[in-house]
Image 1 (cartoon, helix red, strand yellow):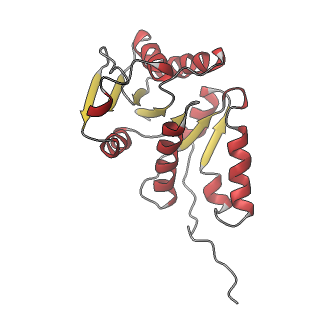
Image 2 (cartoon, one colour):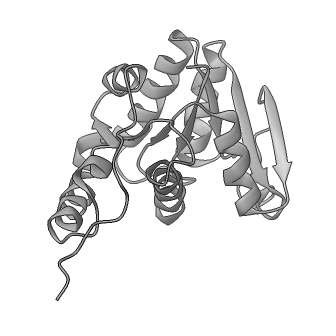
Length: 193
């Protein structure tokens, strides 16, 4: 893997564990010589992971929409910074530049970005791994909800397993290295009455 896209909060969150996880992920990416692709901001967990990668001599590529350059305070010291016209263009460019996708803790934007690339994988638009870095159980309730979605017949188990989860960056990236996308028909058959 050459580059991993990291989705994460433009806020730091309340727990110091989130910052520590962003640092650990940044150090792991740099140590493994995997470039970072992310949302291009200098604030929140976004800034932490980028600063960590850069401090360790790694590559950090940002992709930020014009409307967020001032709001999210575009990072001035990246290896590359792509300013794009829209959020749609941001996600497309990040996906184009990346070989896999990791979500650290974050808010609605983080979830939306992750769910979109996971949906693309489910539909066969790409074969890149998607994963959650579950810091202190942050994503535990989401995992339980996704299991419920499977139980209720809206998601196949094979597609559920496409979203990998680990508590440590090395474990998640090791899983990414051996990832093979499932061959599962997307649509869940229903009984006909």
